[in-house]
Image (tube, rainbow, N blue to C red):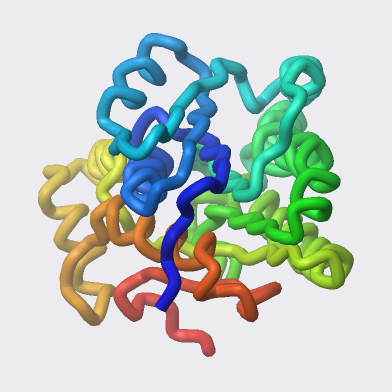
Amino acid sequence: MNLSLKGKYALVCGGSKGIGLATAIELSKQGCNVTLLARHAHDLGDALKILVKKDNQVHRFIAVDQSNPEEVARRFSMIPHGFHILVLNSGGPGAGRAIDSVMTDFKTAFNSLLLSSHVIVRHSYKYMKEAGYGRIINIISIGLKEPIAGLGVSNTIRGAVGNWAKTLAAELGPDGITVNNILPGYTMTDRMSNLMSQRAKERGVEVEEVIQSYIEQIPLRRLAMPGEIGNVVTFLASPAAGYINGVNLPVDGGYLKSL
């Protein structure tokens, strides 16, 4: 099985922590040159130090806020080269019911999760086409298949991202570019910890009780670790996954009840 990414260039959004950083580490282990993208330069600098670096690998970072697609477009217009691999990942919208959310909540999420991603894809499309190798991997959510209670904005915007990706899979496939979505289940990240703390406060219980309530819904009886998502991303980014295109792949320990 050919998993080598030596000589390939990858951009990992949300790369300073959580699933993004775990993915970047796994990509670097396969010889990939990784560029991390997130808001804060200090966090990105710390993350860069963790990546595997050998055989002349070069790792970089871009500090930009994905909620501002115009700024993302400006920054990428200054980058002369594209990337073979795009891992499109961003912090999810805050918790809350859809009916209680205001227009700004939806606009901010749409900017971060879809418009900035589209800007980034357009930047690398010709580069991928000329290279004859392209992997676009969206980190979405199990909410794409089964809406999650209390994540109204996320459920809504993730659906738009899923259909955008499916459309691109058909459009870009003839150019040797695959587009796939990974749907992580409950994963131990800072975002998940914050959501659990919020749920515990709302219910008037300890955080540990909330965690246990999640675990009991998962057939494997545990939460995922970020690296387990990163492993799947790395496989989809590799030559071995060259015939996988346009899929929504749950990595959820069996949580989803739907096929």
